[in-house]
Amino acid sequence: MPRLAFDPEKTPPILISGKSMSENKTGIWRSIRPKIDMDKCTHCMVCWKFCPEACVDLSSGDPQIDMGYCKGCAICADVCPVDCVEMVEEESR
Amino acid sequence: MKKVLMGNHAAAIGVKLARTDVVSAYPITPQTQIIEMLNDLDESGEFGGRFIKVESEHSAMAACLGSATAGARSFTATSSQGLAYMHEMLHWVAGARLPIVMCDVNRAMGAPWILWTDQTDSLSQRDTGWMQFYCSSNQEILDSVLMAYRVAEEVLLPAMVVYDGFTLSHTYEPVDVPDQKLVDKFLPKLKNEYALRADKAEAFSALPSPKEYYRLRARMDHDMGRALKVFEEAGKTFEELFGRRYELIEPYRCEDADTILVVSGAPASTARVAVDQLRKEGCRAGLLKMRAFRPFPAQALRDFVRPGMRLAVVDRNYSQGHHGIFCEEMKSALYSLEKPPEVYGFIAGLGGGDITPELLSEIWRDTDEGRADAAAPNWMEDAR
Image (cartoon, rainbow over all chains, first blue to last red; front, top):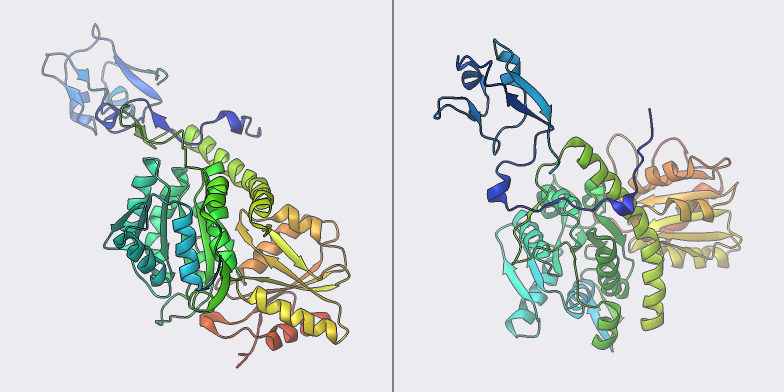
């Protein structure tokens, strides 16, 4: 396996997020995020049922994922019967 | 100015001279007099900082975590079960890279209830990311508080100043109390660029990805390694200002010595007497005093030893199921040498039993004359 290649002096010693905790919500978990193809979505509510964070919001009629709490676990993508949820790379912070 | 001070008061005076901003602590024998004195100084208005009273050691370190995050020079002190109770916060403070200084006055761990000294309390905090410096005299306690702040604030890691309960903490010795102006020169006001700012919304140490965590830990190790050099350089500056020199390891009469006692803490002072006595009897005895335990001065040790040397490591501490802890560390540091010296581990004075010059001479002779077991710890009979 390759050795860790990094310049320690260029790595900050601590992790400081440029946001307050009221914006950070439950932290910086995701490495991938769900993207829903609304043209394919059948509004079956299976993602809403299975989301372990209960962060699928149906109040607008369409499933909207609350990114303040989504951990990027991809369960919604896994359970979607029509495969309309795609997991994409998380944008940089 | 020379004063006659007990170890605990030497520590408290060091904390005051360092112009520490915040002290938060909880009493426990044999440490209590440090915070009693600081509390008295606070009451009389001589201590310029804030004293925060708390209900436990865990809370004491939590209060220091808060004050140090806000950029305040922070201090606490504890012993034994109190240190163990702080354990979770020790990891947090080190990971958050806060240069807090703490005195741990060594006291053996219960059960059974025990008050007297041994090093198993501090050494069982080995992997928390705290630096650990062991003292052999009351002068060294005061000076080590200043040295510890200097190094901690340079590398952004917390530091423990460790010394023997009762043997040093309650024993009076002459101590040269340095001039405040010189201390201010050695230890300017703490400027931590990572400190919390009131005008900026920021979140500290929020959940990272494994990749980020891994690199933070590698960076921490890099800074631990850097601390070795920073300590040596701080030692030189300290000598220029105060006339006393502190190094990571300290050889005494080792030039022509084949068999060397390796000792830390107060027994390292006693070992000087033992070595002088053995020398009078014509034995080529030497002493290596260990000051730094974390970071471990492995390279300094490898540079110091010669093939054919015999090291008698005296441990007033024990890792059950294996060995004395300094002995383990010593062996692992020397293993990479092509011709490593022989290393023998001796266990003595657990729970505060006296480690006398006679006992140390016996250990030296056992090693020199081939009566020590190299594969297992050698448990010595009580000295008295």
